[in-house]
Amino acid sequence: MRYRIITVATSQPEEAVKLLENELPSIDFHPNFGLIIFTTSYYGKHEKVVSFLKKRLKFDTVTFFSDGFGSERGIFMHGILIIMLQVEHKVFITGKGDIGQELGRIADNISDCDIALAVYPALYFPGKSSLLKGFIRDRYYWFRYRRCKSERCKKKILRKYSNWIQKERYFIPVNRVLRALSKARIPVASINLVPIEVHEETPLILYNFEPVGKNVLVVGLKDAELYFKDIFPERGESYEETKEILGKFFALKDEVTIVKEGNVIGEINGLPVKDYIKKRFELEMAENEFVEKLEKGELSAITPFGLAMISGKTYGSSVVGLQGFPLNFYPFYLEFENYFDQGLVIGEVFSQKPHEFVDFGEKMMDGSLKLFFVDSTSLLAYRGETYEIHDFLSGKLRENFLIIFSSLPSARLEITPEKKLISEIEPGIFFFASGTSLMLKFVIS
Amino acid sequence: MSLRIDEIVRDVSDDPSVVGLIIYRVDGVPVFVRVNDEMKVLQHMYFLENQIRSVLDYMFNQNLNEISIKVEDIKILLLPITKTLVMSILFLPIAEYRLEIEAKRVINSLRPVLANEV
Image (cartoon, rainbow over all chains, first blue to last red; front, side, top):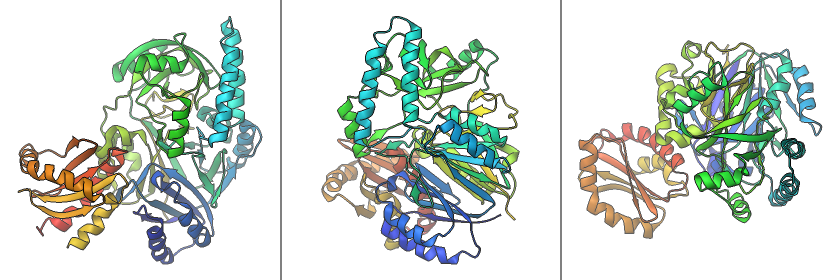
């Protein structure tokens, strides 16, 4: 495998094109696959660079936006990262059918690869008209839900709402994607692009410079390895044990009872989630404020408060971020059927050092090219200190590494890690919502 | 020299939230200024010039990595570059995390340039 990395550290598209014009001719091999990462600060002014690259790069490319990236040169919050590789690969995109079936078809085609990378919008922020349609649907199902006298009736309505929201692909549950791709029997990295700063019709993912929309893009790769880790203590052997571990590690606010079905939460402690959030954290947002913030790109999808749910399959845990969104129901990018009906409302605390995110021990100490996908909430939690991640990797590896700050790095692994990771929510499936990272290794020839 | 500094700090000063960037000597004398919003910078430079010496003294004596001060709607981030130079960034506090991380990289790039020059 041969590779070349280009980093452009400017937020001005004209300047970026000039810099790229100088850099691109110096490539001394024929790449056949490229990963192009724009920082989210480029959103809305990326077209000029995209159309330039479309003319120049005549091989398979996958383009997406991330909150920031790092290389040997430092960490960049404004700029473009281009990774050009000569690697055996296959690219597939889901069609319009049922996402589970579409992914199953893709899984059959990638089983001869060493690893796969799934890139998709776990949460899609549509344009204004679709958003209003979403608000109407929320009210319609809520009207029926609040007339229910039994939990069975409530769950039936939640299921219908969940089916609708998934059919429209506003939400693509991470565990659903990873379960469907597990048919391939290879490790799968999942990069779910819920940016820190949200815009309309984002996340934007491009395959060969054309938008893939609300689909899952899967890249099968040969001669590559995948590792996953979280920065949290190990999970317990029972609900009570994991609850105690979570309570010690995070700022525990409440133990609550939940009504949930599919990927939707209907109630926390008998209250609609938005009312619970308003009461507990005094956070709320009106519909018009939500739309206005989304249009201006000022809406944040990240929150320091969460609902930790414990899996009945592994006693691992995932956190549902709690935001004061103006919806009666609370959909999320996880299917909840394997979780207990009780949960813990917590405040996020990262007590580990930032370099913990990328310290993969001995597994990282070789001459391969390493891509570290680091949970982007680390940027908010550590701010300037995030730079320690770069300093740590520079000290340990010196070269051949890249850091990509992306939301919700999650994975499906074939070999269970030695540590009993708290983020293992189903056997072999890892997701926590924050504090996780992935390492992709490519062998350099 | 000034052009070289300007080229390096542009990664931070081009951020839409930044109103100005000033590099101070430890005695409070500005050695480099880049301004995006003249009025706002002038208004706060007056404040900074009155306070900067004591703030810098405190920063160097206590060996602090950074200090940030909020004045009205502006935040001022002070980061030591060398033992005698401090970079101060005046900005509107939107997406501060982004600015702080960019600032760290700029400091790392400035250090070898300025260490032996000023």
